[in-house]
Image (tube, rainbow, N blue to C red; front, side, top):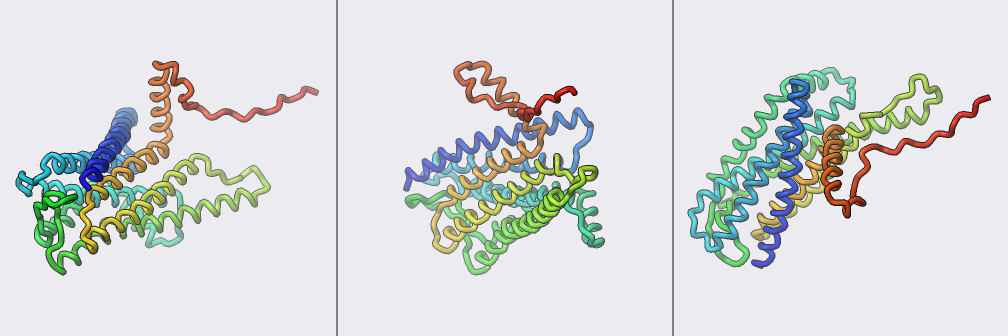
Length: 324
């Protein structure tokens, strides 16, 4: 059991490195773009908030896991563990809602709806993107604060147990835990699935129009939209996969009383790493700059030349016109 904990700790450390690297890259590229344009688009604002939440969540998670490994007998006071877990749960809430908010934003840009009332609500939300990304962490912290009252913090030193774990003390605590999972996992998941259906329906209509079009004068083109569509649908797919795993792990912790919180942090690290990679791919400027820097690094090592990634797509060859 102890070896399993150590293995999860080591694996989470490797994932933490990639999570911090990709999200810090997003942060630095966003700052660089801001200096060039002197403004942020709504999507850049959401992505910046998401990357900051990812980094903060990852650092606190790994610090908690390291403290738990070092303090194997739980000699340190439990309050630091409790505060760290509270921040971890709050940041997880922020990450889930920032991701769903980003998907919602892209769906509003890609899909037009005839419902005037719904359109007004969308416009009102998108006009206050900065306010929304600032309120989400505060709502996450406010949602998690009742844990200090309805949950019990224990120093458990049995095999495969962790220090300062927050567990429900009674029926009210169990109800609150279910409500927290609904608010932090299920509701953003429902919003993302709704956005996924809207984007997929939009894509199907465009593809049908492109197939049915016989006149090239006004042929509908996806063009740059296709990259955004791929990114949005990938975010939804990754989110749903993580949601299923996260709910299952929380079920094992709550119902079967298995203390596998480290596994939860490990899966969250995988999720934040993959999400950051998807976001970099979705922003063409980020992706091209990353590939360029990767290739520049490989130039220092000729033996790794085969790993270089083409920076431009090969243009299809066209037959040379014959003069008549």
